[in-house]
Image (cartoon, rainbow, N blue to C red; front, side):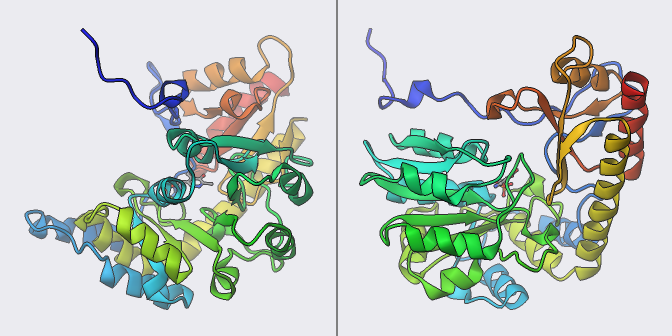
Length: 362
Ligand SMILES: Cc1ncc(COP(=O)(O)O)c(C=O)c1O
């Protein structure tokens, strides 16, 4: 009997492996594997989520009107050009679905966020990986890979898992050097953690041009990864395209309510940003003190390099940390097998991590 077969290339896709969450035998779990919010979710968002239980029988507002208005007010944007999605992942997938087809390609950086490559493959496109310089996006290397079949360039800024960023001036240089018909997607999932004056999340470029999109998420500083909420800021024609192909009710009612409430909770966002800065600095200082190499990070995580020695290499340290309930992320899929990516956790988890590493590296 013959069976349905997917389009060519689909079965070559290796499914995305999310950060681990279990550590059998450990007394307490410190999940530092998925760059989630160290301080949980905004209390105002939790309250709104609970209140949404009253309207579970109703379809959500398919146009996300209230949330888009709130996003527009918060970031001084044009609400009509915001498209909300079930995580920014959905926006990345929709963009690829709309603009990339068989025989065409997307470009991302060699250690860039892996979802772009998966999205491209699922549309029959080819992902191309531009070399990075010191684990940082290299604009010239991206430009070199562009050919007539290039449809999208994805830049995560700051990037996950490296934690590095390029300044606005470099993003603008990239845009200037790309053909006008190549879409530039600036994935600013970690923008809320950024405090550097030369950084811009990309909204200004979106406003100026018709070929650049910025994506954002509620999964990081707002602490809403579990309800899947993100958005894209687009030129009008691209917002129109996304609205044609997204599901009519792609964002659920609880996410719409919680997201809008989270945007009104500056106190929580400020607290989370300050916590991240302070704990990231502390971790960097402690890791340095243990003689471990790490990449200075601008996100809510830190990429740490481990020696090649048995017992001390990244795989062995990952397994060792797990015995104490500290779950971190392996980097093999990003071709960074000597590294582990450690999300900035609560103080207790960060301390536990360092205490355990001290036993190996002091
Ligand atoms: C760079 C980057 N972009 C996008 C995402 C996806 O976020 P979301 O939860 O909004 O789908 C992540 C999540 O880790 C990320 O690191």
